[in-house]
Length: 431
Ligand SMILES: Cc1cc2nc3c(=O)[nH]c(=O)nc-3n(C[C@H](O)[C@H](O)[C@H](O)COP(=O)(O)OP(=O)(O)OC[C@H]3O[C@@H](n4cnc5c(N)ncnc54)[C@H](O)[C@@H]3O)c2cc1C
Image 1 (spheres, rainbow, N blue to C red):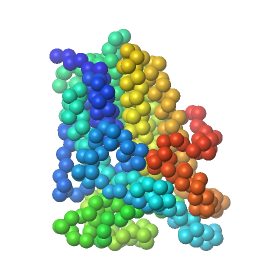
Image 2 (cartoon, rainbow, N blue to C red):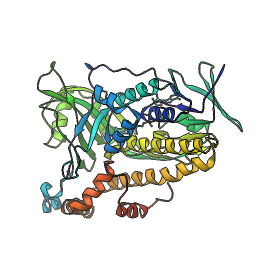
Image 3 (cartoon, rainbow, N blue to C red):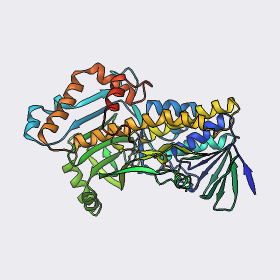
């Protein structure tokens, strides 16, 4: 049996579920398909290992979709401060003590109540599934994969592993970094695997919920702390947190083989002294990290959004924030196409989407690359240069705050200086 829709969204992670909800709100008939079952939430359970720093811009978008309230009803941790510093031990480092080169952003100085929220990915996803399910224009199909995708002149037909056919004008591939929809549409990627991987560790620590997230840069990779919610009455006086330890895959394999007690000792040795006293390691997992960019954002009746279109180094926590920006813009474009009475897959509209989003995503990818190479480096002049950079950022609060307001999504307009600088980065036009 064939069911007809305007749009089929394949992959209902954070980005796909946001798009399905937004397009439903615009009056389009949407099928939202995910191979995973409907996500659940247990307020008593330990946090999901996957957490994301959601920017103020993402919060704004999730509010318009009606999902932010659901997130707050489950759990989300606002942070008011964000600090970064260089942890490399080097004789030249003594020229600039940490107090001079640490850059701290404070919500008050940026004229906002908070800089962002740390939210478990499953919480964001579940909130968006709720809003999608509540919209009569959206049909949620959980627990099924796409087997084939056939494009004709007038439509695209998606066949699910259940044998069911879904016909639509447009398929959105939001099925993540390993996107099958991207492959089925014949869209290739450029990919650059970093030498580091990211190990995420869910921990409990002694003390109230911290209002700061921080990252110390070591030559082997950054080490970061993200605060989560209170651990509740079962563990009075304790809170949950998430640690991210970037390092070579071999070093992370060694760490993963340790007992919790041994790992705790390694963390205490390796992490900056700012880390609160840990009481428990709950779970850990490591993730390969790669910069990956689809060669095209659309082909015929298929368009990509989120990680299926691009992945970046997570060191500044921008991946899903970029994905939400894709979703928001694609939604606007498809609304205009509908209003104009055009085919939703008209290349005129899809090209507009790519022209807007590709340079923005590319800019962020290259900025992360710059950070990665600058900080994973022990060469004395580079060390001095980055410390001078951090020192300058500290000394120039106006410029720093303008960039920070943009990076955190408080301002929507990118400062001209950042646009000009990133456009000069090598490889800008090749990505
Ligand atoms: C260590 C780490 C830390 C990060 N921290 C941050 C952060 O702080 N802030 C931030 O903004 N980003 C962060 N990111 C990036 C962020 O996690 C991703 O950008 C985000 O998850 C991408 O969302 P997505 O919806 O595009 O894809 P995904 O989350 O990958 O979702 C894809 C969905 O598609 C479904 N699917 C896949 N294949 C199929 C198929 N064949 N058929 C049907 N369904 C399918 C999956 O079940 C899934 O639900 C981090 C990433 C890592 C690795």
